[in-house]
Length: 406
Image (cartoon, rainbow, N blue to C red):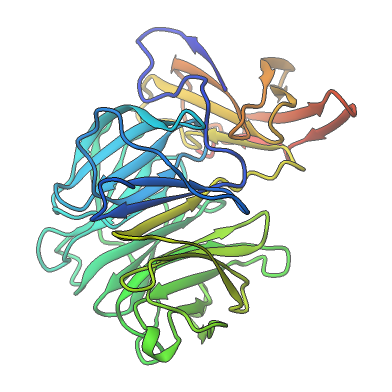
């Protein structure tokens, strides 16, 4: 659920309250199966099919749940279109589907989010019109991050992000290489992280970044089409590039999509072709099939891994515009659905920005349109979010967030 404060122009690209993707559920998208373009899968229950309502995009090749709002971002395999929508569950529909941008390649294969919450899309051949692009979440403006002048060879086929640092990772199908792009995301500033060539197939299909208490520096999981050697999943150190193959038990099928559930500590996987399996796997490789598609190919998977036992505050943008210009301020508390929630400024003065109820998707948000805040005073505000379980009277508070970064 979101509360909106309009200070000027109309609100754009912001979701309203509704029936959202449940906490803990995964969303799987497919191609070559118009009857099942989107599925919501909850652990222990059959998939719920969500047919489109009036969308022209029925071949979804990339999909992500927005980190802060009741929105989803999608990209197609046929026309380079970037779309945004709301998903209604259990109403079984996708609504308010709208075109945001058109990018050069016909096929877009992955989505990540930058430090300011802007979606970053990748796809196509780096020798032609492929690359990586940022789409501004408020205006839809497109900026290239990697293009055919990068000197890279292969197809961009997977993206993920480190949400704490804003680092974007992308994998190249054909070379097996993984690269990173760091803020401020200068054009073609990518740095090679490592490669899975030589230990697995070079046909990278998915990426997932994981940071846990046991591995505070984070690690990458890389999926590929490599079933013949049971090497479809490779773990990669994002600092050194060192790789370790994780054999599957039972053996992996060709894995086309991978996502880490940070709450449950396991991996969601989608396989292609004959297997057509949606599975859960431990980081050590033990896996269990949850569902098998009867047709089509699963192309993307994302999980709404909000932790109901915590309160987490997210703010976009983290950096205010330079030069100074009006922008939309977005803040959300992530926590247990149904809890009372609040967002407040605590430094340099105390002010409550919003109070409400955490929605079924684990989010309660606040937006202010046409805010003006000059750069040059990083960390001049400190904000905190909190939730209260009114039945058990248990309060949870987020870590303080200093804002802005610049």
